[in-house]
Length: 113
Length: 112
Picture (cartoon, rainbow over the protein chains, first blue to last red):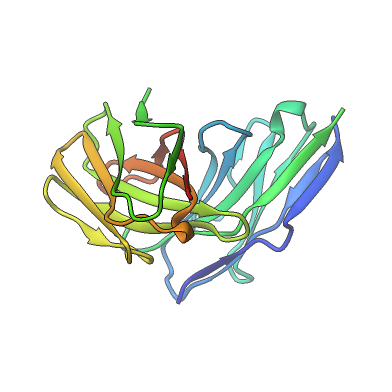
């Protein structure tokens, strides 16, 4: 069975620092997508960044970037110059060949002023 | 922008009641999903639908049913609510083969 593991239930950093959230997954598939979603307090879940497994280049979206290590089945999210608005639950997800998402348990990230 | 709305943000029901949670999207997406979100467990798929009148069981369908009579509307039904169904329920949509799921604001259901 495919699984997604987020080993950090909660993290906190000071504003403007860089923080890395870890995610590992297990699959026998070769082509797939990986995602990081963000759920701010009392607000809707939104996509932060996605990575296609066949692309070797790590995805980047402004202050958000990933470190995708396919052989190690690792997909970490780096947030640079963290802001108060980055405080949220962050979920790592894997999309299987049936186009369904398998989710990690989430990491609660707190940005302190 | 894709807009996904859910009928209630907060809902309190009694054990044994029939509960309807409704999700409406305005982007003509074929695929719609119902998840429940519990602390430490992430999101778990209850049911999904690829088209009108079509439904597929997800990972935890027991105690739930769904209805999709129109493309834009996907309803989750708790036939007889139980306290272990107290949770946050999230609806999501996506295009066929779409990479991104778009979520509604969620309904926090409490069953007393």
